[in-house]
Amino acid sequence: MLEGAKSIGAGAATIALAGAAVGIGNVLSSSIHSVARNPSLAKQSFGDSFLYLFFFKLYFFFLKYPFFLYIIYMILFVFLLFFRLILPLGTLFSNLSPNSFFLITLPPEVQSPQALAHLEGLNFYLSLYEQDPEWVAFIQQELNHNTPLEDIPGRLRLFLMEEKISCLRRDLIQDFICLYNRTQLPLEPYFLEEAVRSYLRHLNGSDNLSILQAAYQDLQENERESIFYLETVAHNQDALDAQSASKRCFEEARRIRWEGFIQSKARLERAEHEHALLLFQYEDKKRGRI
Image (cartoon, rainbow, N blue to C red; front, top):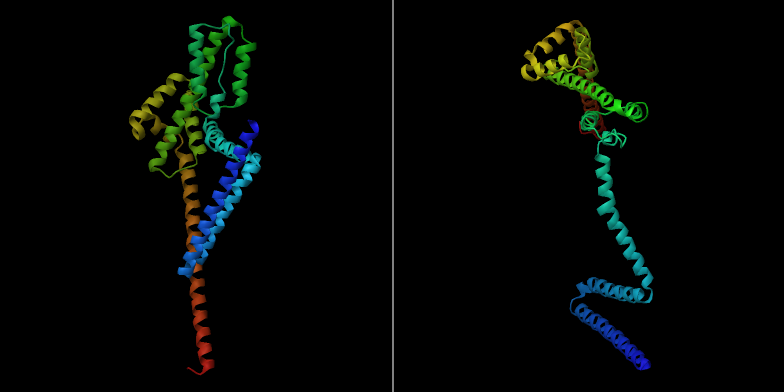
């Protein structure tokens, strides 16, 4: 019975091969007749016949060596996996803020609602700006190893207030810089930042939360008419004027150099044009046209 099945399978394979050969023969014969009727189709018919023959050989090659087909499947799978899953995930993680990995944690023994609220606020302020990893590691070390469990809520509150003041001071400086650069000559950000810090030191308000909050609210509500803005500019008027004059001189010198470059280029192009005309006139004289 097994031998009968084998013979049936062999017969079916033979019939399939014969049918494929007949099909290819029909295609070739029809191509030959078409070429005989229309010689311009010779190249196209030859290309089609070659393509059919190539796929026919490729089909039987994979039937004989299915391992190569599995390799192709694996390559396609890896290709799709990389470009459809791994690459998008890599792009997502690369776009995440590095500060999101600098989150403070507490020992599991600390379950005080007050401590957890302070922890949430501290992590929020740490994520607003780029932080020094050493500073974050210092906070973590202090909370986990150098502070008794009962003192952790108070220590957390101190760190929270320090980060809140730092972030508010940065927001105040950035808003002042953006506001000043709207109408005034744009100065270097570090110089305007130093101007704000200088006035805050004059007020003894660099680390005073109440003064920073009042200045920030005044700047938000009144912008260029705010007392904080006007007093900061007045306090640093001489330095701002000197820096503005230096900036103007630098930009004017750059403009003069650029205009000189354009004029020199125009003179060079004009000289080249005149030189070409003289060459043409000289050639015309040699030929006796003038």
